Length: 414
Image (tube, rainbow, N blue to C red; front, side, top):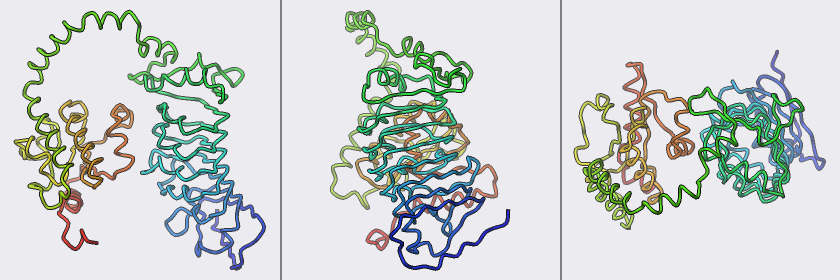
């Protein structure tokens, strides 16, 4: 396919609503601020690359009300965050768009308060949650055909106060109690009609009771309703049993905590106290003893060369940054989980860029999905990968130092 050149010469804004259809492997523009683009209200783009320079071209159609965008799941990443600038959108269709590779997928749909119809057709996404739908208060129709297996959290539907029709096409969920609410909500919400479509149903539609899910082993696909009944329902008898035996269990718990976690209790107390004292300070700049506190699994010590943190109690909250070295060992460590939890609390309190993530090895998305705190951090923060090629090590250290080095007085004021 040969490239096509389209010349738009007018600088006069059209008073009529224009429709524009574009198709090609690469569709790129120059002079994207021309009034012509601002006159388009109906836009259909089918292209692997839809660009103005190196930016996503969609944001320049500021008056668009209907936008149908078809990409390819294999296409290289282009930041689609600027879709949230199209505040006049009433209908948005995204086809074959991989939202897993978007650094800020959850804010793509922010500000779209007039959007009434949203379709995600053959797309990929990590999960459906409230941060994605928080501004979609006018949404009436939602169609979801997601290619990968994902979670649907209860917060996803809370902002959708105008929703009338929700269609799941080939719904693929993990067997998780986080998704258990969907069955009860779909049956009990009279305002919303929920339609389930699937290739294995003879009529194309199937009942909620026939929904299946993917188990942790990645092989078994049990009935989702039976799974939730067996694993996510609290029986009355069990509650009474726990209540009557609470005194004995509490005493046993104290003994077990003392034996298994005794060495960690005092450091935990001091770490928490340190975070609180630091959060109460009016100005924490310039009062750190260390550039970074390193959170890592003891099985990854060879990466560090030596244990640079001998006293966690002092080092954690006296460090300017917290550097988390993420590996499979790290994800299995309860102590590392505690350190990350405290680091995120500090991040929320100080509202500063103090948390750095370094992945020592490639970790599959399915393994990360069980660690919600880390998965959410990856949506909003950049991270570094430890290169396996020794020739790239120096470049890695340079990038890491650029993030860790103290700011100069001029940079702070700027």
